[in-house]
Image (tube, one colour):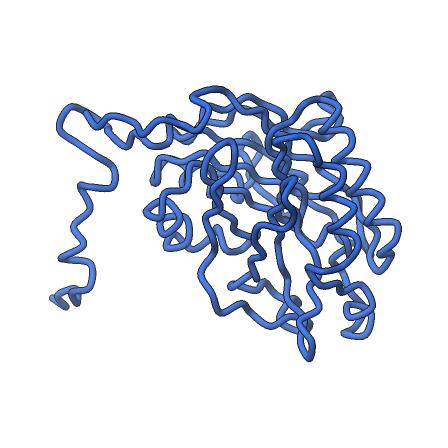
Length: 285
C-alpha cells in the first residue's frame, strides 16, 4: 500500500457548505448575505466554507446589462471585508461571483483566507443561458495549498466532465470545492438528483473529497435542486443540506486520507491508469 503524505495538521477539518438564496441583481444585499454566512461559520470554528455559484449576483439575469451591474473584480472592497473577517483564523472560503473582466464577464470562484484572495478560477464549461453573459475561462482550475490541505475548485457544470476532477486529483487535490447552482429537474422517486450522483462518482473515481454548495430559493420562476452535499473519498455522502440542518451541509473531513490512492494491496487508483493507451484511437470493428 502507498503511505499517505502527512497532512499539514494531520487532523480533522470542519467543512460547511451553506445553501444561500441570493437575489438576482441585488449586489449589496448579496454581499451582506455572504458576509453573514462567513460570520456564522467563523463562530462555529469552520475550517473550510463553500458558498454557491454567483453568490454575490444571483443567476437568472434578464440581460447582459443586469449581469454587468453586479460584476466585481477580485480587488473589490468586498473581498477585503471578507479577508478582515478571516483575520486570526485558518478558515478558507470558496465562493462564486460575477467577475468584471473588463470588456467581458466571467462566472468565477474565489478562494480566500486570512491572507486575502489566494486564487480566482473562471468557469470553463458554461451551462445554457450562461453563454449569453459570460466568456468561458481559458485556464485550468487551480489547486490551492491551505492550512487544511490542498483544495481544488470547479464550478457547477465543470463537474460533469470527468477530465476536470481527474486533472485536479492528479495535481494533488485533497478536496474539490464546487460552488454550484443546480436547476431543479425531475428524477425517479427514491433516487438522488443526478448532479449528486455525478459528484459521488467523481469522488470515488478520483479518491478525493468533494464539497458542493448549491443554492436555495426560487429566482424568477427557477427552482433549484438544493443539493448541497459533502462526499468522502470513497464516494459516500457524509453530509447533506436539509431543513433540519438549516440548509447547510456540515461535516468533519480527514483530508490527508485523500492522499492514499491504494484500493488493494496490488492496486492504486492513479498509478493503475494506462495513460499509454488513452491517446490511441479505438479500433472501429
